[in-house]
Length: 300
Ligand SMILES: Nc1ncnc2c1ncn2[C@@H]1O[C@H](COP(=O)(O)OP(=O)(O)OP(=O)(O)O)[C@@H](O)[C@H]1O
Image (cartoon, rainbow, N blue to C red; front, top):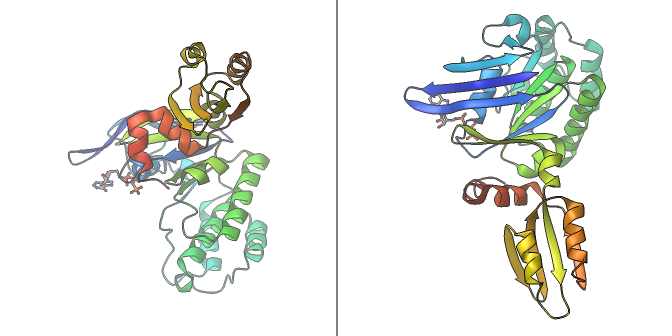
């Protein structure tokens, strides 16, 4: 289990993270979302043991992370710009990681290299950016880490490779309960792969929730009535977060339990009634009001 308790980090006088409390259970895929400069990489670097927090605790399996070598053998971190030794081939990097990770599986490295059709004898710096990222994934998955930390992991990968990588990640989570922390600006990507999300804004963790809970609590409703307008009483009960009229159809965003909402609406005999799920992007906007709009403008 990964935990941050009251963790803060300053750079000179700039507060990059302020009193962050976060927990990630084993086998979970946690998406950390935030705009540029929100503090995602700083948080990740605390967890990877690269930075030390100024205040609070940063632990993995209850052990403090910073300068903890045995913990580092369980964590693999792929930064937004993967790093390789200069002039090294994938095969040479594999040899290096084999010496760092007791869980390294040589057979898996060979299978993954085959799957991605990687020439393991070619110097890594001669590969394209997207290819270098694929190599980082091949090395990470061959190390069989307990925890995989990914900073903007799928940037620069083509759709086919993205799918391949996502499937491999999900496989490792399902098979051996690997835990993944992913930071991203891309809400759709996070929605696709994560089961928990944390939203970070100006160094503060605003929301941390299970994605299904977030989705179960907020709905989009489309209704239309014979006489043109929904009954006042219904609106009073539903108390929509947002209302829109599109021709004769009303669109409401409402909070609450799906069955209860459906029952109330059916009692008013609408001629059209649809209850639709919201995308993560929509939840983000409606749940977070002004902050949601501000962040949405810089996320994709
Ligand atoms: N080593 C550093 N020295 C000084 N300031 C830093 C350092 N690292 C980060 N910061 C500052 O801390 C804030 C948070 O940066 P961080 O890289 O964690 O954000 P981020 O959410 O990862 O952003 P992005 O999405 O742009 O990568 C930024 O204002 C950044 O300028």
